[in-house]
Image (cartoon, rainbow, N blue to C red):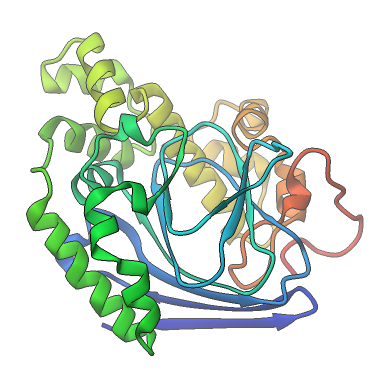
Length: 299
C-alpha cells in the first residue's frame, strides 16, 4: 500500500508526516490508518490535544513525551502509551526530537486489540508496558530497529493481525452502539440505540461504560465534537455558525459551551493556534497562555 508523505520546515520547526492505511482486516478498528511522525527543533512548546471518541495509541520511537492533563502544572514523562476516553484536554510535547507512530483506535478496536475493557483505560494515559501482551512483544523496540516507514507499517500490520486473532471476540453490543453513533455523527438519541438492541437504558449505560470507558451520551458528544474539530482544522477560514449547524449543534452558543468544557478554550483561540501542514494546534489555545494578535491562523 502507498505511503503519503508531507514535510514542513520553518521557524516553527521541522516535521515529517508519513501515512498509510492498515491491512483491510484492521480498517474497522483503526481510524485514519497509521501515522508516522518525526519532529525536531519545535519552537512553539506543547500541543493542545482535545478529547474525542477514539483512543490514540502512540508507539514511541524516540525520547519521552511529556503530558499534562487539563492544564495541570506537573508534566508526566511517558514512553509508548494509549489514552483512554476522556472529557478533558491535555498538553503533550517533548524537550527534544521526537519520533513515533500513532494509530487511533475505535472503541471496539481498542477492546479487541488491547485486550482490556475500556473502563480500565478511561480518563488515563496508560503505558503499553502495563498491558501484558504488548509488553511481551517489545513492539516499539522492534519498530525502532527498522529502517523505513514501509517496513515499520508492515511489521505493525503483522502484529495487530496477531493481536486480532488472539484477542477477545467482537462485542456485538459495543459494535452496534459505535456504528450507530458514528453513522449519525453523534446525533442519534441514546434511547433509540437501546431500543434497537432490545436493552434498557440502564443496561446500555452499564455495558457502554464497561466496554468503551464512557457513557453513551458522552460517547455521542465526543463523536459530535470530533466532527467539529476536524472541520475547523481542515478549512482555511471556517464559519463557526456553519460549523455549528453542520455538526449538529443547536447554535453557536452550544458550540462555544462544548469548546469551553471539552477543550478548555474558545473556537477563536483554537483557530488562531493552528499549525500549518497538519502540525496540530499549539498550547497557545489553552487557558493561561497568550495568543499573539496578527497573522492568519494556520499559516
